[in-house]
Length: 72
Image (cartoon, one colour):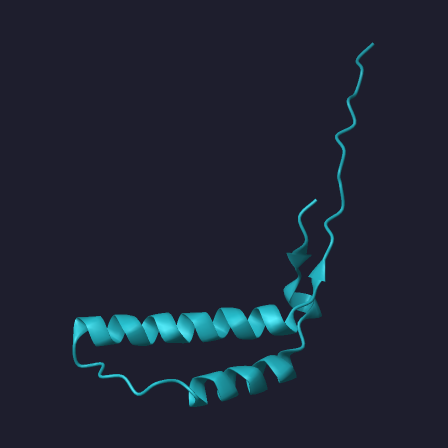
C-alpha cells in the first residue's frame, strides 16, 4: 500500500504561508532568456510541490479487493 495525499486534508492557510516564504527566499533570475525562464519555472514548481508535501498529510490507501461473482 502506498500512502497518498488527499487535497481535502491539506492545511491551505499554512500552505499559502509556506509558499509565500519559499518564493520570497528565491534567487533573483533573469527571465529575459529561455534558460532563465526555465530556471524560474523550475523554482516555482519545486516551491509548490514542497509546500504541498509539507502541508498535506500522507494517509494510507485502502486495499480494495475485487469480489468475483459466480453466475448460476
